Length: 95
Image (tube, rainbow, N blue to C red; front, side, top):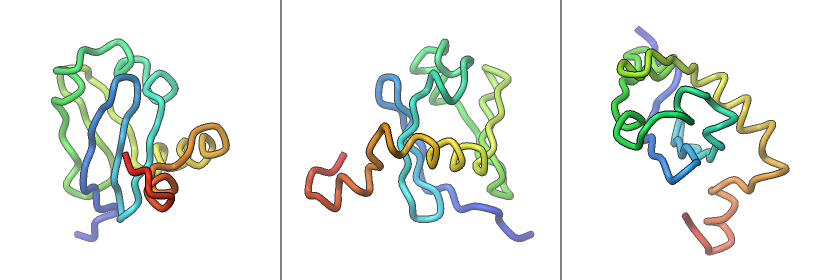
């Protein structure tokens, strides 16, 4: 089976989702990503499963599924308003 995406890490910082996929780190505002995640506790957000194919992420306790393609599209639409963490690290600020 070919993997659609290689998800290296997923983390949360207050109201931000920080996802590293295919060697690229994106930072997404949780309220614009998923209302279920926005309403979830920190503990609930950390209980997730990455699909073996790399297609998406599933939060079983929240009954939420997000596709990586959708998250990457959202990150591209957000980029003018919120700096990409990779851009910050290139400027020496990092995360």
